[in-house]
Length: 328
Ligand code: GLU
Image (cartoon, rainbow, N blue to C red):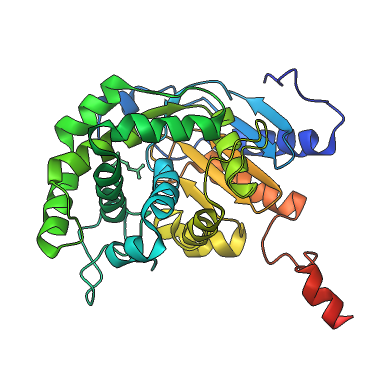
């Protein structure tokens, strides 16, 4: 286990992070995603955990500098960006905010509106990619990558080979996009929307990057390490709300009860957790459970939530100071 030089070994947060790591290391269940060869070739033993505070302190343990593809974790950030660019009303007219209770790649839409249930499932994320493509045009990927890089405080890049595989094999996503186009949720050409979606899933990040990106959301859209305003405040609020109810695939209800923080996972083994105004968590361990969430990542975040009292409804959280004054 390597502990990064930036950490003080006797810091209680560092100790908690190390304990979460050690407690999760023995969890060797689950399997690598294998729908494309690149993901099936990843070293299954890799495990990294990072915690970045909203005041700009970073704690790390394990393989926090190993690159992997962001996959569905990108959905949270793309949604945030779309909200900022065209406004919540326009985005909501095209993508709902209801948990679907079904798998991420389900071919199903809200029976009343014919819109995707939410932006954290593929149908919703493809629609969001359509919105971004519409606003940014042919340069959309570069523009979004720039934003993600500002959030990570490092120039991120594309894993070309994952992107090619996603694009070559993504027939189900194309099918979803055609249905979205037919129902009117997707206004842009199918190939434009899915190509951007595949690229966004194929952005290379590390657990350290994810923690900093999550801390940027925790810090109301401002990167706590650079002071750069990356995301709009109101868009962050709406994004965290959807991450809270829909971020962990069809495990989201259990997650809210047991861990209680907005989160998003991806089939590359990445996972972010956001504790509003406090900190961002980034985890990477590529073995996935049957819902598609990182086995060790879920265990580690649950452990940290319990240990550090991060659950939104933790009884020790005193809540709004304004209301507190009224109750006094
Ligand atoms: N590229 C994957 C897909 O669209 C992303 C899935 C995920 O991380 O949930 O199938």
